[in-house]
Image (cartoon, rainbow, N blue to C red; front, side, top):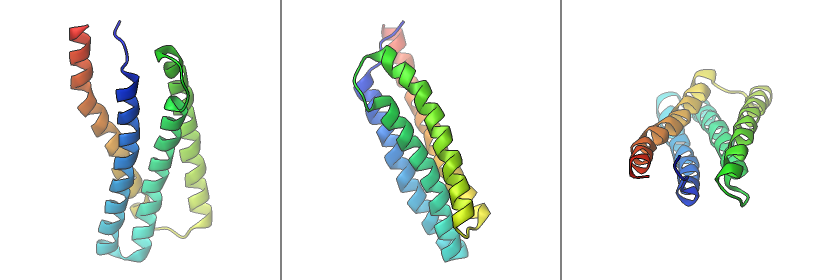
Length: 133
C-alpha cells in the first residue's frame, strides 16, 4: 500500500481545472476563426461545462481536511457531483441558449481530453512512488 501525496494531488486537480479553462478559451477562439460567433460561444459553453464539473469535483474532494481515507470517500462523492453538475449544465445550456451543437460538444470533448492527458502524465510518477514504497 502506498501513501497518497494529498498536496500534490490537490495541485494536480486544480491544475487540471485551470488547464481546462485555458483549453476552453482556445477552443472558442478556434471555433470563432472557423465558424463565427455562435460557434465560439457554443465551444466556450461546452468547455465551461466540463471545467465547472471538474471544479466541483476538485472542491468536493480537496475542500476539507482529513487524511487519505476521507479523501477517497470524498472522491466518490465528488465524481457523482461532477456527473450531476455536467448533466444539469448541459440541460440548462440546451434549454436557455442557442448553440451550435457540434462546436459545443467539441469544446466539451477538448476540455475532457485535458483530464485524461493529466491522468496519463501522472501515472509514471505514481508508478515510481509505488516502486519506491
